[in-house]
Amino acid sequence: MSVNPIVCATDLTKRFNGKTAVDHIDFEICEGEIAGLLGPNGAGKTTTIRMLLNIADPDEGRLELFGRNYTRARQAILSKLNTCSATMSLPGKLTVWQNLRVYSDFYEVPQAGARIDFLMDRCQLRDMRNTKAFNLSTGQQMRLALAKAFLNKPRLL
Image 1: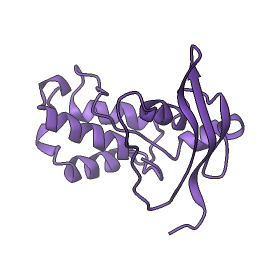
Image 2 (image 1 turned 180 degrees about the horizontal axis):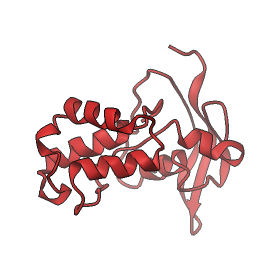
Image 3 (image 1 turned 90 degrees about the vertical axis):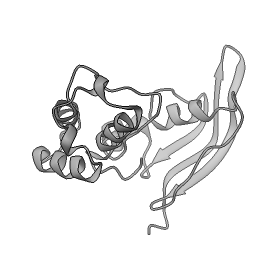
Image 4 (image 1 turned 180 degrees about the vertical axis):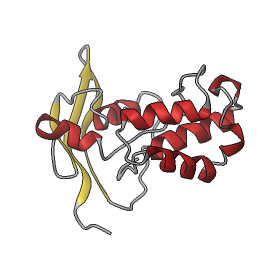
């Protein structure tokens, strides 16, 4: 396990229309650690994740992933992470295999066919290979979303 954090947030702050959503938080996550954000509705959990994914920019503070910041190394950082969310949906008209294939192209996954086969087995999706995503149960859709999230072998999920 690495002693250097792969995520380092210092004095991270985000405001919307004068209201502070994330208020000067500090945290580190080291490789191999499992971390969670806990708090009531409106505490800034989603906003913090959006900053980690470079969907929202912090108004103050410093955010480094893998020892680098998004200003200087956006593509390098994004290539090492992925996300999976219960609120995220994948293209419903595409089959399980087509979804994984499209995302493997997006993530530039080497030997994509073998990686897709491995993840379909690992996530118990092989029998649903040709099933359209909108025909999957909620649990099956979540397994597909997890397979998508692991396509690029992320160091941070």
